[in-house]
Amino acid sequence: MKQERRTWSGMSTIAITVFFLVCFLSLILFGTNIYRGVAESHTGNNNRRAVLSYLLTISRTNEADVKAEEGAYGDMLVIADGDTGYSTRIYQYEGSLVEDYGRSGGELYPRDAARIADNSMFEIEEISDDLLMITTDKGIVYIHVRGGGR
Image 1 (cartoon, helix red, strand yellow):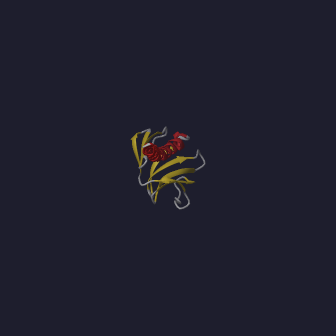
Image 2 (cartoon, rainbow, N blue to C red):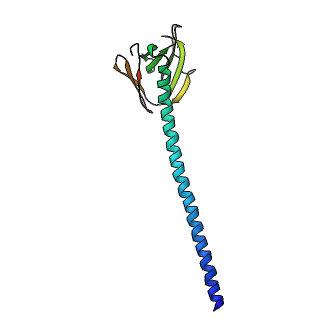
Image 3 (cartoon, helix red, strand yellow):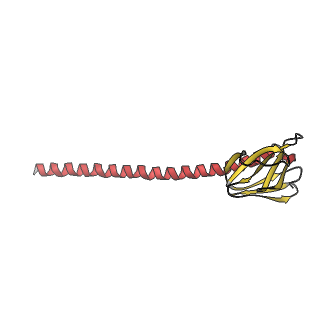
């Protein structure tokens, strides 16, 4: 009889240990999946914000010399480089938002332009004389321009 109690006691101890081990591993897998989802969401938000922040920051460096133009590839944000006759031009090219630096009003070289981000939409709308709304697939950013938008 004592041996039967020992066997049952030993089996129940092993069963409880296995049960807690399975619960512990399940908890780790569940937590890992939640963390992965949160991290992917966080990375996506940061990527969206980075593009919009970049557009806002580059336009704020020279608010008086920012304007929107219609270029060969659609809407284009043009930021003049003072009185040098050169400007930074941001526009959409083959699924990417690109930045090109060259003579104001000069030819665009999109293959040599710096790629900012993957982007399928880039539209600039003049809300008022001194406010532009830029819409990308990452979101919308409003830019105040002192010299008039278009």
